[in-house]
Image (cartoon, rainbow, N blue to C red; front, side):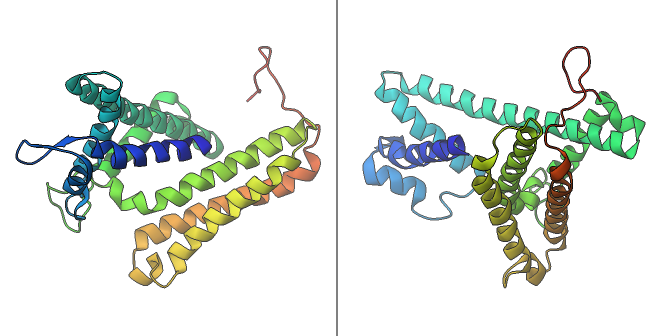
Length: 258
C-alpha cells in the first residue's frame, strides 16, 4: 500500500509538473509551463478518455527522462514500453490469480473441470473476455464494445483495499499458528477491514448509492463482496482459539499437504 501511494504521487508529479516541462501543442508548437498544463487540463473534455490520460503520463515522464539527457523520441518510446508492460503484467497476474481461485473453488465444490489448471484458466479468461467485450452504455454499440470493465470499475477502490485487509487477516492467522506475535497487526488489520467495508456500504445504501440509483449489478456485486468478507471474518474468529501452535501438515518437500 505504501508503494502504491508512492507510485500515485509520482504519477501526479509526472502528469502535473512533467507536462509543464514541454509538450507539443495542437498546431505543432512547443508549449511550456502553464500553457502546456492548460493544453492538457483546461477542461474535463480535454482530459477525457484513456488515451489522453495515458498520453499525459507518458509525456510527463518522458520530460523527466529528457532532463537526464535522453532524446525526446527515445524517452517517449521507453515510457510507452513501460506502460504497455505494466498493463500486460497486470493482466497476466489477474488471470493467474483468478485461475488459482477458480481451482480452489473447484476443489471445494468438487467440480473436476475447474480443478484442472487448463479448465480453470479457460474459465477465468472466458469470464474476463465476456466482461471486457460487453458494451459500457445501454444497448449494443460497436463504439462502446470492449469497455465493459468500466461497468465494475466503481467497486475497484473498495475491493482493492478490502483485499489488503484480508491479506492482513491471513498473515495474522499464519503468525498465530506459529505462536509468533500478532499484536502489531491489530490496528492495521481492523482499519483495513472496517473502513473499506464501510465505504462500500455507503456506496450501496447512501443517498446517491447504487440502491437509490437502481444500479442492480453494482448493488449485487457489492453485497456479495461484503458477505464474503464477513464470512471470512467469522471463519477466522471461529478458528482463532484452536489454531495457536497448530502447524500445517507438510509433504516430503516441506510444502503444505493438500
